[in-house]
Image (cartoon, rainbow, N blue to C red):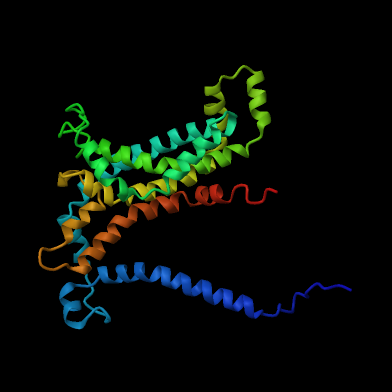
Length: 294
């Protein structure tokens, strides 16, 4: 007996499916509401909301964006974020891929221990290392051409090093599992052709890892670009702050204009949104790759 549904008939709606869609819709609205509310608030004047409250409509203006850009000097601080984010992401992916290649392709006694060490580092709260890192950064000297303070403290290199250190563990975990799924016959053929270990890594493994690297690059750019804590702790010069830390310049001494801060937050979020949409296909491909394997 055929159980196929005719084209003219609709499948019955199951209660469980209705509950699932209602739940997902509620979660999506709850997730997007703060973002949409910040965008709405950024287009309203402080004078209007001070009189009528935030649960009202009116007082539309774009002056908040102009004021936020000028007050927080976003143009300069965006460049600071580029100086920190781009080298940190490239170094993180390169070093993590090197470690992941060793873990995935070589069997030795400390293989699992090395992977566990990098993975366990992600479980350590960053704030617990605040005091030792701060004291270490104030003691390590750098040449004058690398740092105006001639220390690792208050330099771009310090923030790059901190971000690379805390992000490598996650990237090693992801890349090592990805590399283990690559056919071992590729490396046997490369060895027969006389390829060195470096050529096996650079010319065989890395091209095959492009989807995973693209997905990780998207995540790492977002995480490092949005990093706020270490910049406020390991820097003292305001003109070196990344763009996220420069949002403090929008806070007043006696009150805070939430409309102005919302506009600044929207401006700060735009680059990460652009990067995500540009790399969306690679990001999704990297996350779903291998999902259909048995």
